[in-house]
Image (cartoon, rainbow, N blue to C red; front, side, top):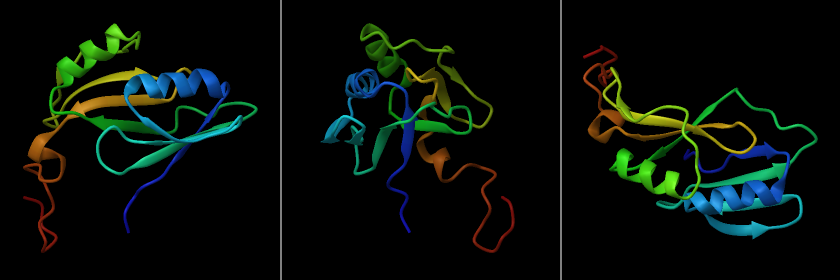
Length: 129
């Protein structure tokens, strides 16, 4: 299986569509109640759907970039507000956090080889390295 699609509930489709276009997502489907986007890099898609009340706080979504600081600076220039400064974390990722207009939490991060192969990874025989 390959994870490809997720949907976020939003309160204002136009506001959210504008926000995600600003992040660099490409619009694939556009209607008055639903939009589907293609990620700026790769083939992952996601959608937004108008809901009576947006449900937030249950998940954190991640956007991977080779240069967190440069991408953060670029997005700030477009008006994206960040909750944290970019920093190196103990799990060997560099990351910063921002929220979409409905409060969905996103992290802009770079993990390099540590995304799939951290020093503490479980080995094929089930042991932790």
